[in-house]
Every structure is written in structure tokens, then in C-alpha cells.
Amino acid sequence: TPPPTPPSTPPPTPPPSEDCTDNEAWFFETRRGKRKRCEWVEQDPSKRCKKMGSLNNQDLLAYDACPVACSECPGDCKDSRTWVFITSRLKEKSCSWVANRPLRRCSKEGVDNGEDVSAEQACPKACSTC
Image 1 (tube, rainbow, N blue to C red):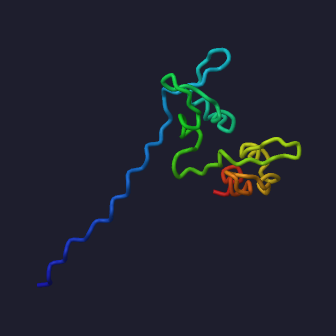
Image 2: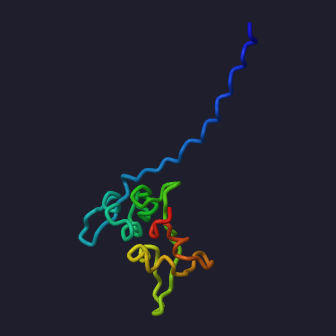
Image 3: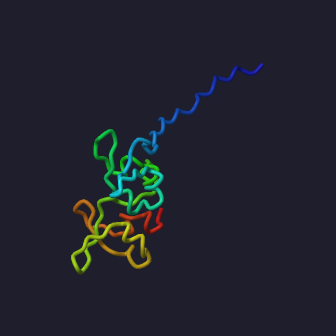
């Protein structure tokens, strides 16, 4: 009779994934007093994720309250929130500006946290590189 085979070691359990859900209690109030939620943010994230809303009477950006709507979950393809390109007229432009004309703008050199960085590196979602 063959010797008994030792039981195989199961593979390690991966760490639990971070819970990434939009906060149902967060809202942005329009000038007319209408409350907008994360579903509204998701319809135009390049503009609306920057909105300052409210959660439990505290100011909170949509980026932080609506991570699904703003593609801010871990592992998501996302653009830098801090990268800027300075135009010849000294206007600051972000990755949402790059996304409007990626063929022309992904090659632009900008700054991200004090470092020279191309739009292609800082804005992978806008430039479709991820």
C-alpha cells in the first residue's frame, strides 16, 4: 500500500477588500435648495466630484463621499486630483481639461505635488492609458 499523502496546505486567504460604497447620507445642495446625491455626481464626475456637500452637518467633498461615482475606489483607474498644467495665460488646468481633448493634451507637462509630470502619467483615465 502507498504511504498516505499529507494534506495540502490551502492557499493564503487574501485580505478583505476595502468597502467602497457611495454614502447615501451625503448631499450637495443647489442654489435653489435641491439636494443632489451621489447618483447625480456620477452623471458628470469631472465637474461634480469637486462639489462640496454635507454629511452629518460636516462639509465633505463628493470625491470622499461618493467614491464609486468618482472612480475613487482602490484599484480604479483614476486621474490625479492635484496635477495642474499652467496655460500661457496663467490659468490652471486639471485632468478633466485633459479629458476634453486627450489627443492634444496628454503630452502636456504639468506639476503634481511639486514634481514635473506629464498629463499622460498623471491623468491615465483621461488619456486612456489604464
